Length: 342
Image 1 (cartoon, rainbow, N blue to C red):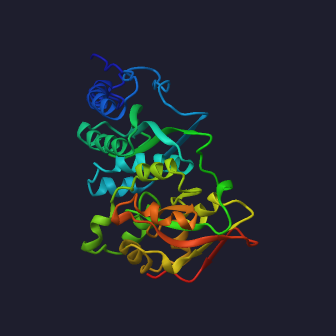
Image 2 (image 1 turned 45 degrees about the vertical axis):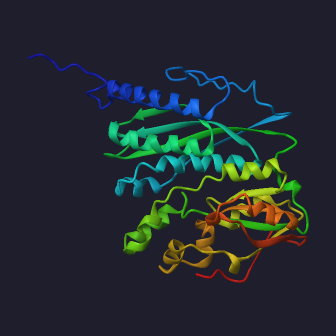
C-alpha cells in the first residue's frame, strides 16, 4: 500500500488559494493607489517590504507618526451576523483616528488577516472594507499579510490587525502642551459603538434580545475623522485632540491635557446615542459605561472659544461638534460633574 505523502495542503494550509487571493488584492490595490496617491507609486505586491515615496511631500521638518490596532471582539458579531464588508473600515479607522490626534496625515496602511482556513468569498468582503476605509482616509493600502493558521484559530474564526503611518510638520504637531487655561472642550459625535467594549456587548446580548430598531446600530463602522481634523489642523484651529477609544472619555481626554491643567467635563451635555442607553439599561453602572464605551463621543477637540463657530463649519450635521467642558487650573487632571442623561 502506497504511503500518503505529507504536504502543506494536507496539513490545512492551501498556498494556491492564498495566491489567488493575492491576485485579487493586486488588482484592487492598483486602482486604489491610482485614486489616492499623486506621488510616485511602487508595485509592492509580491515584494518582501512595501515602498512609499515621500520625496514629493511638501512638509517642512517632517515627523513620522505610526499606529497599530485591531477591532477587538467586534469580529465575533461581524462574523455571526455575516456583516463582513464593513469590519475593514473599522480596522482602518482604529489606526488613522489615532494618527490624527497628533495632526498627522495618514500616508499608507498595511493589514494582517489571520484565518483558520482561507475562504475567498469571506476574505474578499473583509478586504473590500479595508479598501473603503483607506479611500475615506485618503491613504494607500501598500501591503499586508494573510495567514492561514489551522490549529490556532477555531473553525471559521479569524483576526485582523492594521498598521498605519502618517506625517506631520514639527511646527504643526498637536500636543497637550498647546492647551491653555480657559480653552473649551468639544465633543464630536461617534457613529455608534465604534470598535470598543464589544466583549461587554456580547455578554449582555447572551441574556438580552436587542430591539429591532437598534440592530443596525450594533455593527455600524467606526467613523473616520481624518478629513475634518486635518482641515482644522491646516487652519490652526485646535490645540489638542483625543480619540475616544478603549477607556472612554475618562481615560482618553486626560492624555491630551498637560499635568498642570484640568479637563472639566459636564456629563449632562453629552448626547448619548440610543444604543448606549439600551446597554446602560441592562444593569451597567455609569462609571462602567464611561470607561468602556464612547457613549456617543467619538473624538474630542480642545480649542479657543473664539474658534468654535469656524470649527463647526467643517463638519456635516450628524457629526457637528458641541461643547461639553473647559480647561482650568485645578489640583486634579480630570473633573467630571453632573450626570449622563440616558
